[in-house]
Figure (spheres, one colour):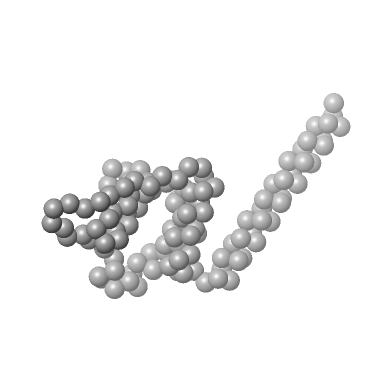
Length: 119
């Protein structure tokens, strides 16, 4: 679970540089923002863990992303780069999201109109 003391960071190691990105709770809000367990099971053992051996020092940085929309975009970008989901499944999910959004907006407008007529 995001935020627990042992699951706070998404960590990327490139060469001798480690980047820490806070694991935003949004990672649990939508299946499209995380990799499925089947993806992990299919990875060879040497790709399941990152490590860094060093002598002397290494560089590190914390990366921050402000705003839920930017956080969602970064999580989606990361998952899409791994391509764990069929493109058709993602298109169907996006279409369903748009349909739900349209229905919610229509319902809000209908409520506003009904309230205005009731005055």
